[in-house]
Image 1: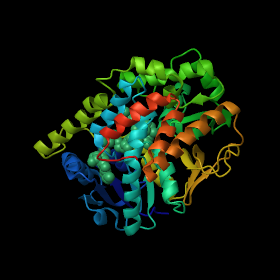
Image 2: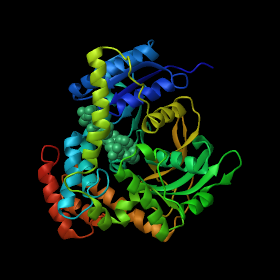
Image 3: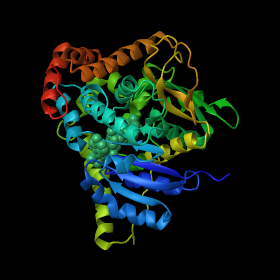
Length: 442
Ligand code: NAD
Ligand code: G6P
Ligand code: MN
């Protein structure tokens, strides 16, 4: 049966990740055919920088698809089927501050974890709630597939603001990226690995890696490999030093806690002191990304604009972020029931954790959304860690929605990267000043 053609809206389309997402949409055009593609950003100048590349590329590979570039809500959302949301409230300028301000207090400076993730969360919550309201005005039935970070906090906030909306999903590509890396080590096709996983976003563990052709769990084999070899991402040759160190810290975490295989982001919670010591307060991941992906993509798009053609220009494709976004939408659109690691409301999946926690687990993606695999009761160590982190997430969302300073301070004190209320207060006051155009607490 021929697959129905879809209308997709990309929110935050001025991001330099979007050309590679377009490449994924092109590569998957028979699996996830498009009728119309809308590129929306609140800052039309960001889109304009990429526009000629995107227009010429779509004309070359998908001339039948209607293409719209806009900063208007109605044009963006009217009749859309899928909203791929990839916005950054405050742009890279604020990402830099999220990463640098905590380092002044010897605290982890990271975009999604610790005080930086908190400040970013406070910015994302308002922007995301606004976006969902606008989408629902024009497209009540559209799927909203959110990738905006800190996805853990955004997921809790959207669940609180829109508890009955069953068509909002929050997704992270890091488990997908890790599975791609496991597959390379194990010399199997990543699509033959079916994971089992539990945790919160950027705070979880792989518990099984089923190899579907035989049913064997490959995790023991992978763990034994990793006890003697450095864990490297599948594309290690192209990754910057900070990411290579991050992957290597999976080995370090497992040398203490070998039971499950941790998400790379747990390094910030287990080894905050070492992370701070290794950080350069004048050159963080934001600088690295600006001088890497941002510069390369903008230069390429500028060249296309100047020559007004794609001559000598490669097709950018997204091996992880872009592919995952399209595969997720494809599984929902055509009810494929493919397995992804994805966020969902707990509601008994892990019976010894709060019902309302937004957990990250493996599940099938169907036309009704996530059908999660039951995890069962988790061990005391993981329960303790997750309860503390979930309390941090929940208090952060409440602090934001109620402009409540005390709850923010409680949240930061619960965060394992901080713990000390004196430091929590100092960094909170500094972040509040830096974010005064976005949020304020009383
Ligand atoms: P970026 O800063 O390069 O681009 C983001 C774009 O969003 C900018 O063009 C900006 O103008 C736009 N924007 C800001 N506020 C907006 C709003 N209210 N409505 C619409 N557009 C808005 O960002 P990036 O590095 O590509 O990251 C984009 C987002 O995706 C971030 O939240 C990032 O953390 C997240 N991300 C998530 C995953 C994941 O696994 N979930 C992976 C990669 C990136
Ligand atoms: C992974 C994470 C995302 C995060 C991204 C940062 O993909 O899952 O949540 O946004 O890394 O990548 P960057 O290259 O911007 O540092
Ligand atoms: Mn992520």
